Image: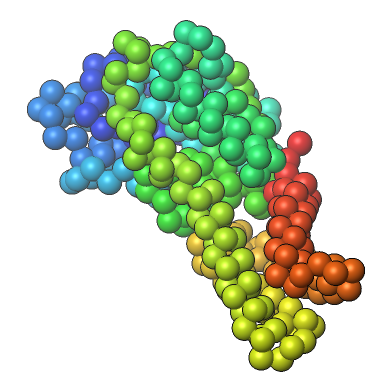
Amino acid sequence: MTSNVLLIPAYEASNVLLDLVNELSKSFPKIIIVNDGSKLESSKKIFSKLNKIKNVYLLNHTSNLGKGAALKTGLFFAIKNLDFDFIITLDADGQHLSRDVVRLSDYTENHKNISLVLGVRNFDKNVPIRSRMGNVLTSLIFKCVYGYDTPDTQTGLRAIKRSIVHEITNLSSNGYNFEIDVLIFLIKNKLEISTVNITTVYLNGNKTSHFKPISDSIQIYRSILAFSTISFLCFIIDFCLFLILLFISNSIFIAVMISRCMSGCINFYLNRKLFLANNSQKKKQSIFYLVLFLINLFSSYLGIYTLTSIGVSIVLSKVLMDTFLFFGSFLFQRQFFYSRK
């Protein structure tokens, strides 16, 4: 038997989960199941049966708190009470075959330096369209923003190294977006991620899934949308301050320096507030941000000064330079700060 621990968040469980756990209990000595506020009597009977299995730890939420909250409950319990190298999470709806769970666990035995292993699926034409389109779109957006290319950002089958459990439980998300936020956390802190191909399974057209395409997709994209919103908000603040200061001082230098410094401080504060960083990386990230900020600051002034000197209006010069610097900074951060091979 492996020393790894299983963690299964479950809402309105069925016999599918019971059969899966009975099978996996032959290979895993410790299985944590979190009942995320299930109300159906049929589900309560399933959890009652699961609680009688020798190596199962059943944890209960009194109400439905979300997949991320259920995962964090299990992670908290594991880190406080159990000894393990990796904790392997999987879904309760039968999307993961027991042999793939065992194979993922076996993979960690020879790759103990990796912080996260993803069990990735192949989304071909046999996959239900809502699942296929949602995963393809999320993977595309994720690659564009963070430079990390994987066909399955939303997989629930993951092996999480013990050393990062405490820090990811501090992430604020509690819904489906928790799994995306974990990926973002690892990428931002340059922690090792690996993948293992697994079988793609969707029972009855994925009708048993509790994923809500619109509301849960918004949750998943929340971090990406928040990052974009902060950038746009700071652009507006910078632009308005620039025009006001230019009117008052009649100096491009003063207008650029003050408006950029104020919007930059707001940008830095909001990003640090909303996106948790590894404590050991905060100093490094702060230095990186300061260097990038100073490059943008002086580039903005020199660019606006040059454009206005050849006859381009100040307003248009400001818009052109800020647009150029935004995309330049984005590509630079993705390549050298967030990117992974």
